[in-house]
Amino acid sequence: MNELVIALGWAGMYGALALGAIGSIIGCAIAGQAAIGAMVDTESGHGRYLGVSVMPSTGVIYGIVIMFTLQREVTDTAAPGLFGIGLLAGIALLYASVLQGRACASAIQAMKVKPEIFGLSLAPAAIVEGFSVFVFVFALVLAGNIPA
Image (cartoon, rainbow, N blue to C red; front, side, top):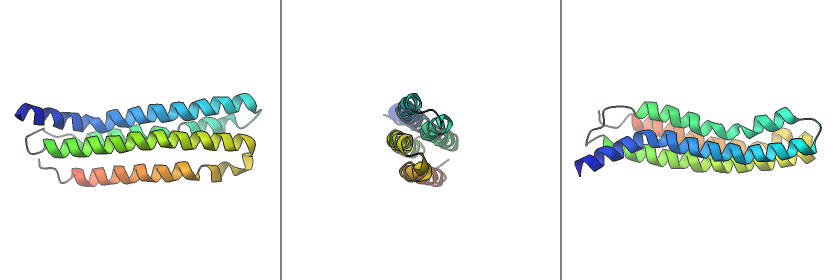
């Protein structure tokens, strides 16, 4: 049982990075596909499409910082906190990055038709980013309470 608790602590420590990376990969792929489609249909604005398509990549950045914040000796007392914070933050970052990719894809499609709504079309993706920031900040705050 003790080895399982320790293993779960290690999984949590690196779970935020792994799950955040998976979400960023999926989100950037979704938005990237929309960007490629928009570039085929338009003569200009290609840089904006590509810029918007990388917005979901922040999930992996937040996951990296959370992982470094969680790094400590994995003990019986620290493992549950490491597992809970790392896993739950990672799942939230994964989900937010995928949905942000969908919001970015929609923004790219809207910009393709009406380039003047560039800023407005990014609002839904920015709101999803805000939730990722909340997860990031709360994970950092909670990590400070894990026993050494």
